Length: 228
Image (cartoon, rainbow, N blue to C red; front, side, top):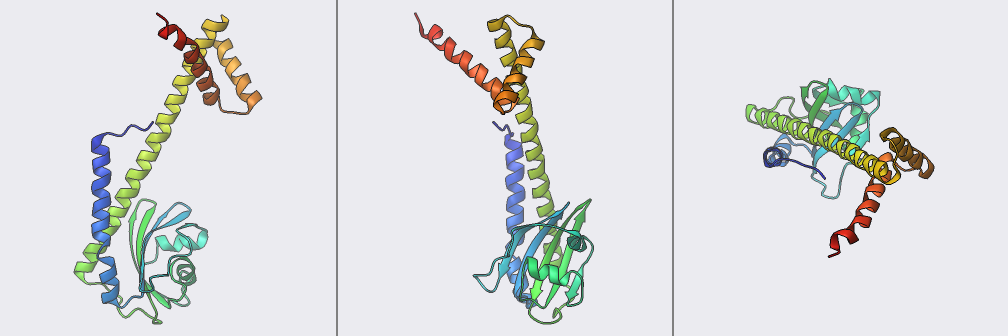
């Protein structure tokens, strides 16, 4: 079971709403710039995640929502501005988000090893505009910040879930050791070794074995509790 405070959930909801509000204007921005599509790319480590996509062609969607990134994707973390044919990143962007586009305009925001890039896609060999207005630049900055913040919160929650699961597993093992010590009259070390042998023999995790031991004990105790 996951335990998150009301403040944690409120913060996450607020950030997601801020991201939705900031992204809402991307379609209009793409139309104003003469773009045929726009995407928000989140690059971290060896992966690129497409967190937003819009195209004038309603039936067009990116080939992959989550792409395993090789060395060619590293350019996403360093290149900004116009990307045309001949640029090493050009073909990568076509394969990733818009196969028919002939040029791109990138606006990246970096935070440590993470990068959020807003990519406008064009049919023309070069973007009609190579700079965005001050208002659009501010909006794109908000999108970058909100995306990074939402991802950071999601990662922290994932780490908390992992830690919570591990702690719960350790508590189960301790309870199972106590049950075995009482039922079989063995030492704590002996109880732990018994659980390990069962785990190896049945090819299941130590936590799963411990859960079964505790559950069986609870079932045995139930008639006693219900008896007058």
